Amino acid sequence: MTIMRGRIVLAASLCAGLALAVGGCGSDKEKAAGGATETRVSVKTGLPPGADPNQARSLTFAEFASIPEPPGVAKNDPRYDKQRIPAFPNPLNVKEGDVVSVRGYLQIVTLMGDGDYNLHFTAAPDSPDNYAVVEIPDDDDVADRKLRPLVESARDALKSRALSNKDPARSPGTKMAAPLYAEITGQLFFSDTHVGDAPAPDRQGLHRATNWQIHPGLKISFPAVPAK
Image (cartoon, rainbow, N blue to C red; front, top):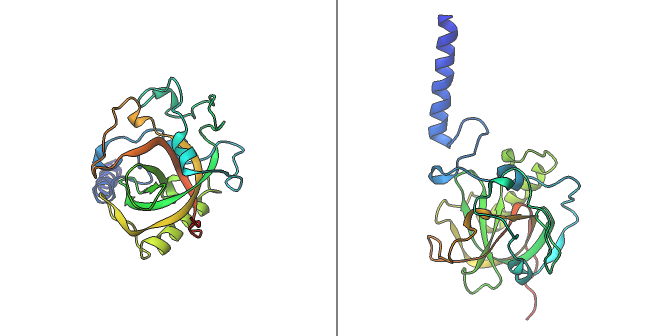
């Protein structure tokens, strides 16, 4: 019994030490930077049954930013912590869980406390303001093994093209010296964290164009900039 208790204490000590070093023990990354608990983790790290990442609907940045917020959804709504928001009437006839592709200019990439790559992209290259968010998760946060290679490939492509084969910086992130025109494909996801909040700038003085995101981001490519 004494030996067994000693082993348990040792294991707990090792886990606590690892938690201090990497922000968690094992694969549990429920805590984001600053100690806040992440919401809707199981929704934003996978796709609904039957969704095909190779069958994405193309939206312009303006269309993406114009999607109305789902009616009746509250700030950090507990009803949708583990399930997707139901379809609702909207001009584009889209819903959470759809696979979409959007093109825009990559402005900033940040390594988040949970290991995600957080991307800010905009409609035009001249300003990082009025941005939309894409998050490409760490592959070990993706339960669906079929999606893991896509996530890994997207992160590798991003590092190769925009980050000198390195992880992005933590807050305030790595700003592109020259914004890169990119196409990003992934799940249409609604972030209810800021529902009802008055419009306000973030820590860098920038504004979100929408509470809709692409999360998880599954593919990224860098097509030619369209002719004017």
